[in-house]
Structures are given as C-alpha cells and as structure tokens.
Image (cartoon, rainbow, N blue to C red):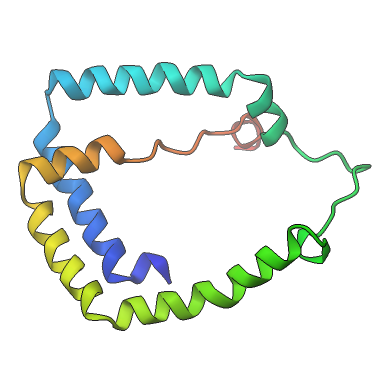
Length: 132
C-alpha cells in the first residue's frame, strides 16, 4: 500500500531529482564517505551482529502483544495507525504536502536533501550469495 501512495511517488521523484543534482558534488562525496565509514563501524559492532544474527532454534520467542508492559502500546498503535493513515490520505494537508513535494523535487536544494536522507541499500547476506 505504501509503495502505491502519492507520498511514496513524490519521495521517489525527489530522490531522482536530488541524485541528478548532486552528481559530482564534493560535499555529497564527503558525506557518502562518512556514511560508509559509519556503516562499516556499525555493521562490525557486536550489537549489530547480535541483533541481525539468525535465530537459535532453541530460543523461545515471546509475542510482545501478550506482555503487560509492551502489549498495551502495541495494541494502541494497531488501533491508531490505520485510521490516522486513512485520514491523512483523505486530508487537504496530504494533497498540499504532495504539491510542495513535487515543487521541491525539481529544486536543487530538494534534490540535494533527498540524496542526503536516502537510506542505504540493504546488505547482501553471505547465505544468499552461496545459494545462487
């Protein structure tokens, strides 16, 4: 549903514009180098490896929705997110933000901002490479 929304299409347009505008920029190259270094540090950290490790079959999985501490918060999110998203897509503010996004996607500043805020590509796992 998100991929088909107007917001997603505006964000994709902004991303493409910023990518075109930022080609050859020394600032962008420095930012990419910094992000690459930070990503390397994070990926090699013990915490990241622990969080992304394949689950141990002997580990018990707990459904947080059934817990007393996290469960109420999860239920609240489940009840609130969908109506808010529906109200947002039907609101005038959403169409206004889409129009502003379309204008920004064609500006050099908007394109640069989108390039800076673009998330990194997901990492390829070693298991995926071995199976191909």
